[in-house]
Image (tube, rainbow, N blue to C red):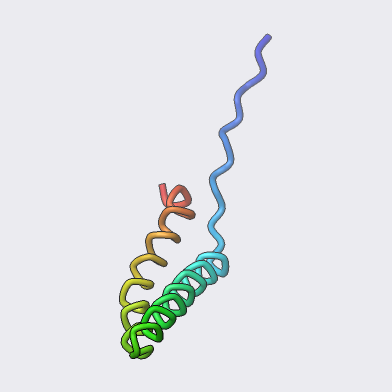
Length: 71
């Protein structure tokens, strides 16, 4: 006789993990932008550009990592 099938467990969502991933991705982008800006002579503009590109990159990283938790 066959055993009854159990549903697969849902993926877990860790808000602290998602926040950490968002902050780490954004900070890395700001740091890289600052280095590029420093090499160009204006580190503040590089940091601003890193923040502008880092926030969407962080959101994409969180969505890619934890996207299955919301389906």
